[in-house]
Length: 303
Image (cartoon, rainbow, N blue to C red; front, side):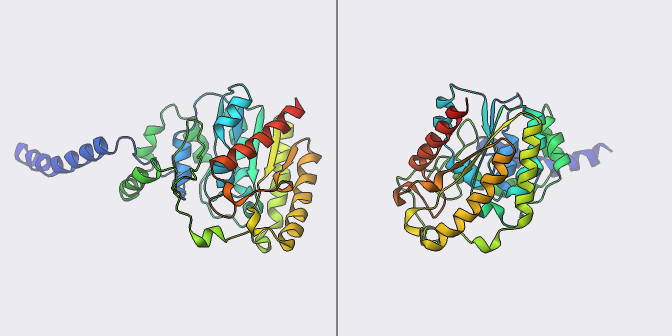
């Protein structure tokens, strides 16, 4: 028996040494448990606060990138704030998370920064009940046992080494202390395809407008103030077709949001110079500051 245990020990020792060394070398970049099929969302959920919040933001990368945390927090006199925005979120995802997050964090202000792209078909996969239990857990590190996937863990840890240290790449997860990502314009390598890519209005689903109505209903029932921000397109892509299509979308969204007591902030009514963007729809840090200042003005008017 002792001989058998010795052989097992000799077999496992190199594996243990590997994982200990890997963890020490990458301790700042260790990938979060694979709770969902979204790498970005997994990292965001793992870092989510345990305490209640005053202000909560959620949505796609429009929320994560185009909302500047520092401007918002300073303008609201340092509230407890977290940005749950994540790549690939659509309005259906926002609805799936709304009741959970309002119940868990009890915010008084709920912010959605969105664009027409967020009304496309759903891509993400997750069990919202599992996410609920994960967020309520007092130790999210136990998620490594419940969602063990070594291949994913190693791969994403290596990706984190770049994404979490670079604010000048499209895949940046250079989170600030509130979960937002402010993209630097200096040194940013803009890709031609993304720079010239606008919005496709033929992919908008009617069901997402219905989901938005439900989001507004949930927030209204809980006396949580909704601020829905329609994010802009860079000036170089604005044409008559866009103006017509975005107005139809804006009018529809405004009607839904305001009918439930929410505030609709239409930033597309302003001119947005190309120098404020890193592609067609994502703002750099300067653009994010401007959008956040417009939002702050709207919040101030509602006080």
